[in-house]
Length: 144
Figure 1 (cartoon, one colour):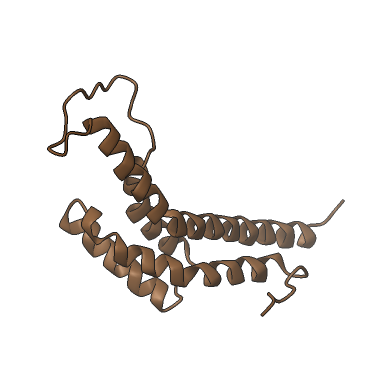
Figure 2: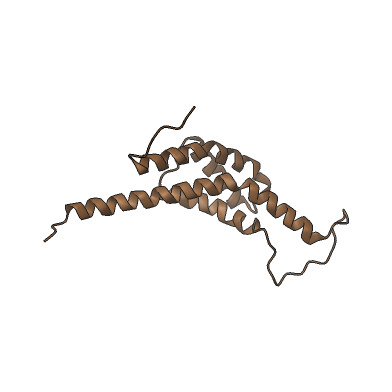
């Protein structure tokens, strides 16, 4: 099935994009349960998951909720270790610990991709909505 042509309305196209990403984002949240560092993060993720499942993700508050859950994960998923960190110990498997940390970070980075894509779509939607408001205001102003 081909995607509908939504070129005539960029806001509708952004909404469509976000809705398209909702299912994979919901699944990603379910798979990330082991990464919640405290009860607050876990509760925020649970509320966000419910909002996504109901397709109620289009307000600024919803974007804030997504970022509250996603940004700490993005910090952990940073593929490189900070330059001033030197990890020389070894894991019980015998592998260098820094290699294991990078591997885990890469796994997490892949797991959060649907959420990052949803965030991008919602940021785009927010900018489009704001530009529409500004354009309407400008159209209503006296040009003299």
